[in-house]
Amino acid sequence: MPIPVPLPRIERFERLGYGMFIHWGLYAQLGQGEWVQHLRKIPMDEYVKLKESFTAQDFDARRIAATARASGMKYITLTSRHHDGFSLYDTRGLSDHDAPHSAAGRDLAAEFVDGCRAEGILPFFYHTTLDWYQPSFHSDFDAYLDYLHKSVEVLCTHYGELGGLWFDGNWSKPDADWKLDRLYGLIRRLQPEAMIINNTGLGAKGETGHPQIDSVTFEQGRPTPMNREGMEKYVAAEMCQTMNRHWGIGAEDFNYQSPGDVIENLCACRKVGANYLLNVGPTAQGRIPDYEAATLRRAGEWIGAHEKLIYEGRLSAVTGNGADFALELDGKLYLFIHQLSAGGDAHVTVGAAGAGPRAFRGLESAVSGVRWVDNQEELAFTHASGLLCIDATGYPYGVDRVVRVAEVDLSPLTLGNR
Ligand code: GLC
Image 1 (tube, rainbow, N blue to C red):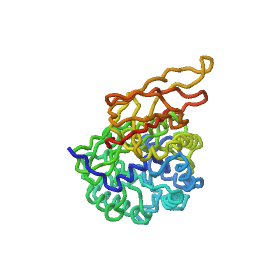
Image 2 (cartoon, helix red, strand yellow):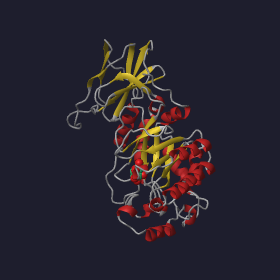
Image 3 (cartoon, rainbow, N blue to C red):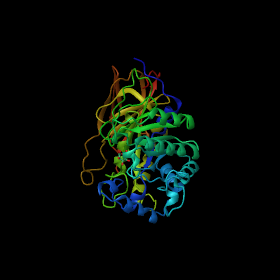
Image 4 (cartoon, helix red, strand yellow):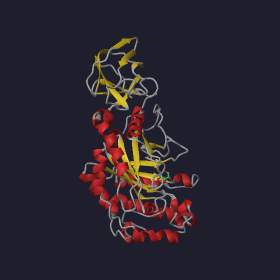
């Protein structure tokens, strides 16, 4: 069965590879995650008072975009409105539950798109579809959908060309008629090149839905390979993930990913051709916490050593064992080797296992050389009957790159893509 060819916007999205998710809103002031209003049953008339102290005084969109760029991220998806119904954008009269009616008195989404563009980052908007603030969400769903669709129209009209719209919340009313044709038709009319994504939630990872959807989501999970054979349309895949256990900032959440975890997760996504959308939870007034920015920048240094490969490397028919995998780029094959040992001797090094042979199957073209990308060390190899076996030497003392990449010279190129 044939695999459909991706539309240009979908291909462009896949090449972005790695993005920053930002969960920020009134809830950040409480520092207990973005669901705090609902889960702690804070009455809405009390919760809305947070608008009076939401100054956004530390929100510097350009600086955030610069952090993303320095960390190897190519796009940012910002919560323009989350489930508490509060909009970071100027709803232009649709509601006063928005940033211009808060102490900030500014259109923070406008600042966001400008900051992104100044740094060469593609802006995306997350938008909730469920709403704890609007009574019509429960009492008059048709009226609510009018409000929701007009809200999205505002985003599609006043913020220039968007990378995409990322919806979340249809899982709250699985049997409702969300009038998706109308919503997606509106986006296609106003933002023809925008990706349309609708989060299928924790329970339905990787599920496709409406034909206008351009990417499936893997919320908080390792993405699985997509079988696109016989699909009507080529859809991309994106895994979104928290750096800790919450999307919105959690003052008492210490359970963080390390730079090494981020590298491994990014690799796990690229292994199956999925994008990685990694979340930060800015502080009450809009700064990315230092420890989050530092983790991202550190992982970004690793990406910087393999840049083109991470974004543009294509899936290969060649397969490794365990987490090891291969990508193809510009006529070469690249092997991603995991859990390699650290160098040294028994006095300084623990866990010295892991160096030695690594096998890859399905390589038909002839191999003329294999070397580590980071230090150009040539590696011994054998190659017979499609089986490539390399002698993966351990890291030199002082080095541990978490995932180490070997470059394979091929002649002639007969690799099968996707
Ligand atoms: C979930 C949560 C939400 C978060 C989203 C991100 O659906 O409800 O808080 O924004 O996941 O993927």
